[in-house]
Length: 395
Image: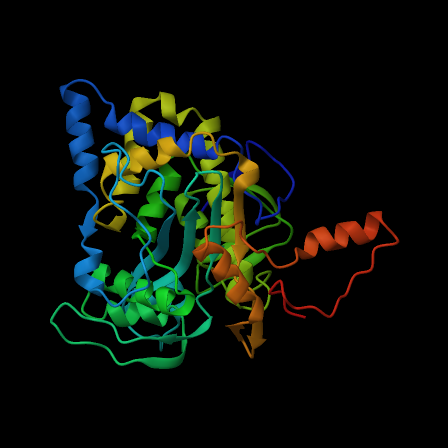
């Protein structure tokens, strides 16, 4: 794996911050670029990109035993989601088996099959005034309900199971749609939130996306090394190629990676995605038709989605409706938890978080440890209770 000295050697940035101010308009511009092409070559490009998305009918997979769906029939044919709160589950996954499984951090004795190492619940407010993004740790201990399989059989309900086991159970036959469906069912059972759509991003495609934009800049406060993830990088700022960026996103155990839990990795992943969005802008990818097509081809060819969101026209309508959303209204959080050995469990604050999303109200966030520390430094009269673990920080 290789890195080069960063073209933008900036200091480390807090990984829980929202993307840059232009992030949402950029997503909108990219998708609208696709659906407003003119000319034969552009039409072919659109068809090629749309054809790269593997789409599945979520209703067929999950049936009707689900939380209440508050959506109504759309009034605007150009935006099927107009005026509705919208929840989409985004998963990052690898297909892992044999030697490849050991190489990707699973270890020689890991279970074969598909794994979802990244899961985000993305909630878009009905009035499009804000977007809330909640990271769900793979190590979270949950109940995984019985899930349907493509052959008509079902899995057994599992208690006190790791959250990412839902994807592996649903995908035991190799069908990514059913793997995503079991994860959706698990999230719905845990939160009582209706999930409108899902998106699965294959991490091999993520690597190609990074290479298509010429790498991604990222800074590190200390050396990081993981034999399992094939990560070996020194402290400082680097421009990561696709392979190295993928290793940074995957790595959990090793030097400079914390206690081996999923929490530190979630922060790195959020920062990595934020930097990618910014660099698509800074490197003028949107104005270069060849580079833009290569980037979008890598993106769409790595997607498995439910039917509606997998339609590029639907993506365009949603993106356009978010054009006025300000960065201050894009919120990242990791669900509140308590430690259970080297795993984590949802704590009492989680119910408040899920309730705010169900009711389409501003997300109830746990106390921000960094903000608390800063207040304590600048205001001697502020008392800080260091005993609270509500933010999900061990220790």
